[in-house]
Amino acid sequence: MGAGLKAEQGRKAIKIPSWVFFGIVCGRRLSCVDCANEPVIMQPLIDLQSDEFFMGEALRMARRAWEQEEVPVGAVVVLEGRVIARAYNQVEQLKDATAHAEILAITQAEAAVGDWRLTNCQLYVTKEPCPMCAGALVHARVDRVIFGCASPKDGAAGSLMNLLQHPGLNHRCEITSGVRQHDCSAMLQSFFRERR
Image (cartoon, rainbow, N blue to C red; front, top):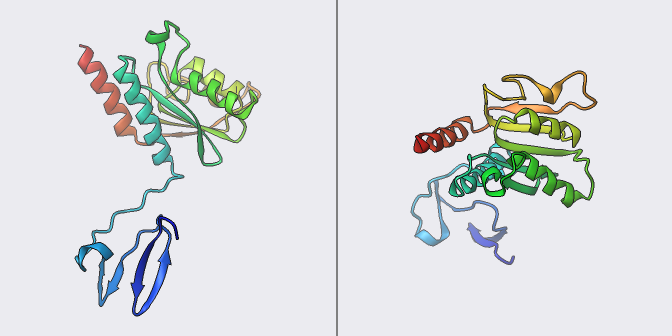
């Protein structure tokens, strides 16, 4: 059982893995083993494979960028349900105009898989990719791009243009937009409000 816990149902003990939410059924009440039959408030389980979860990881990277006084954009690359690369904007820190979160995450992911082709990978990013990043995503053959908030001035995933699905290019990325949009846009707005 390891870190698993034990719940009792009637007189028979049942082994339950630690990752399962559990309680004891006492009549019609669900209660926790350690809290003397006090009612348990059921919380929704976190789906560790959801777009919202992985965007949360990208938001953590964006927070790191903010702490470094960089524009708070974060990105993660996911392969088979696992994060294989994490990055945030480092333009100012590296004195490199190409040091966007997406570019840095792509480079890390390529090293992780040992190939420049990132087929079967998804990239989660807090802000819609710019033309440079969209071009890199297409060339790296990323399957799917998921972003939080749109970027009307330079967005290349549908706002200003759509390079990710341009019919003249040899690869097209699937696009999902608006994942945790409020959180992503609020972080950017707060950052720029602080700078004024």
